[in-house]
Image (cartoon, rainbow, N blue to C red; front, side):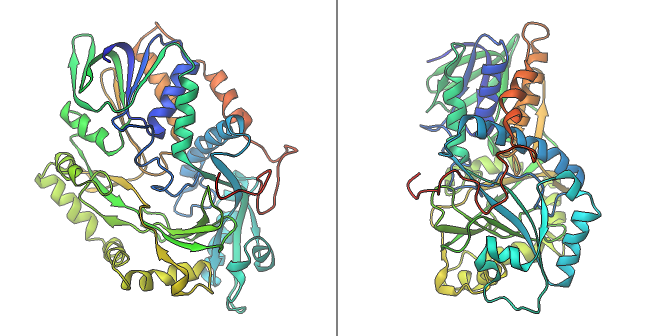
Length: 465
């Protein structure tokens, strides 16, 4: 099962799958291998139960600056274009209405300023402000039972892509496998990665893999492997486990609430599940855990490897968690996991979206939620927001917290350029063809197919999709 390759990609989640697809289809690299430790592709954080199923554009994420939204927008449009092109029957994604909801004078004023004065209305042509009546038409449960004296405003768009990222990763890998240059090995965990005179050697239980160039796209484990090679010494991880509560038939699409300032985690939102729209998921919660994978005690040791147990790491944690906003938030989220007390404590967040929700309407989602590693800069002793990428000598390490899945194909495009540069002039990357295959299929405002209703699916979604 071993061999010599031009490029080896470690990790078969959405990040590694995106790079495999991009290099297989749009470069002339002669031999590429993907190594995935699990028995199947996308079994961990990319699995649909372990993430929010949201394609983040930056339009309703109110913790994004305009500058960040501009960057995320292109990445989301690239992935959305791939879905429109390769999943026209909407088997692995749905397209529904989404909105961010402002309740009360302050929040309404904030949303109004964001749209008209801060430039978000110009950046997102499909985004539009809507009032109580139209909110009620799209999402009746959001208005039902709400105090009529409370001002309501939402910024709404039809680009509410609900995505099964695990199935998208499988689609990317399946398409890449059509190329003779590609080999995919599942159940193949990398136990050691060492630099050699002319590249890298990866040890696995199935033998050694040699390559000229390596890309490690193994989520939290990417930093662990990077540190073993002497990279990323100024970074540690703050692993956050997300969880969800479930309800029945509450929402048609996605409804976000305004983000609390200074918090790096998504505001609580409700959305209909990608495969069963009768299920509404509320969350995520955010709980600190000393593991790199949810529910796997074996990864506690991996976390300690990444953490390093040094003064700089402890000082960084202390500085971050002493924040007067972040610390109470972290403590509150610990309560949500407790029996009886947890649902009662979380219910007000649900009621901000659906005022008539009662305690008996929600239940803790068992088996839902993954670990998102927040990156900590030990030099600045602060959270380093967004994805992290470490580029070394003929090697790339991708550590991808949110919105990593949304921008996975854009990251793959950037990495493909870097990989080709590693080979100097031996290989080329056809960016024009890549863009035509992906963002070239993203529906624009002027397209005849553009729709403004609550659902843009060609047919009602079925529970057994």
